[in-house]
Image (tube, rainbow, N blue to C red; front, side, top):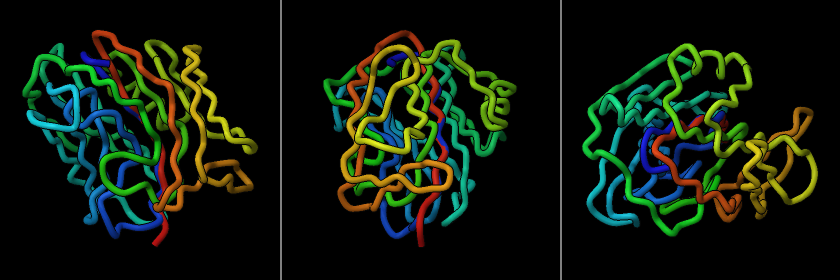
Length: 219
């Protein structure tokens, strides 16, 4: 996704001891998310089509907490020229976009792995949209509604068994699970912060995009 984008996910951090990537493609391209040691979360994107200059960083200033589920949504609204962070359905930060569109990379999309250390904690319900989700739609996602319009990648991460993370968007962007373990009673993947990750075949490009996720980390 090189234009409008929304990324959404749930995270539960197990630690805040280092810089870690819950989601990554190209941080100077389509976009990457980095959790910082102070609990703040950064989104990086750019126009090199690689992990190189030039790029823009955008910080969610309301930090995540260890062992607490949080719903994060990053909106890249290039129609209006703004980037927005949402935490648990509430907008926390907004800045102007420095570029008119991202430059696509040849990199794959990873969950739990990126250009810094692998993720340490729980991750579920990772979504990528090729459009801008409204504030009401983001609140509905937080409340559990399944919004499918414009979705180009959706990994619920609730299979409970096996080494495949199925893409429920209908685009067949399934992911291979490396090392991450299923935890119960509600099935969710736990990443150890060392060598666990998911490698997807997501390569969708379009004029827009939104990413969403849930996560939990250990201390």
